[in-house]
Length: 383
Image (cartoon, rainbow, N blue to C red; front, side):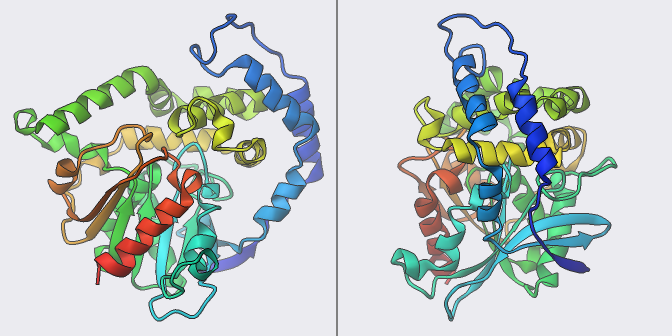
């Protein structure tokens, strides 16, 4: 496997082109006083895009991101980008930990939590509770290759990551994920169970609901199912579009940075614990750095295709592997939280934490809470 150092370096002409496109946005009309009811609020988006075109400094953000150690690995013909940060202090425990992001973000999901995991002493925690952290970009996201063939499901991504970890010297490791990262972590249990020390999740995979007789559901599980249906009906249309006609949507999102920003910001606002003000959880620079990565890498369409491949694949019908210890950290403003008894139907649940705050992007929104839960699970619950 060829592993090479990588540095983010977007050409200046691409940065200039982005600014020009944003400045020349052709705006639609909007219903007055509707707020976010019809989708992304136009007044907010215009302010964000004005900042993007005139004040946002991509090169400064690029320099900051290059403070991490970036690499690429060619795995079975697919180039995978990843961040690899080793523990900053000698540790008798030092555990490898694979962190997998979801949508609509990228490896940036873990930017705030990486230092907490690799250098716990800096944050007043036991220096022995340190991790070596590997954060790959999913295929089709960020600086990883955009798959050109059918079949890049979470299971396929898990197979690639399962080959990456031993190539880095890690025969045994822990894994954590949320959103698509949770699906990939679930799939890792299928493809590399002997390599996994344990897995940590921020949700219980919805796919298992199809294996339960509805008559056997507890009251809490019935509430969970109803909440899931409500969320599907009010928030889930994006997934149906991305899962059925991703290419049609990709043309617009690859050609219009303003359209891309509207599509992503809506979800960051709706899915985070921000009380309706997305900038309580994401600064303008953080929002635009994430969106700019999608833009510069032209990965809006390839990220959409993960939904299509999953909806048209068979990976979701695998049988859960009970041998692997699992932990779940449930953040109250995440999309739909399952009760503990639902998780215990399928998994060896060693830890189930109901967090006091935070939403879908837990590693970004509440990195200290998530880091503490990861340390507690991997260094104490598994002793």
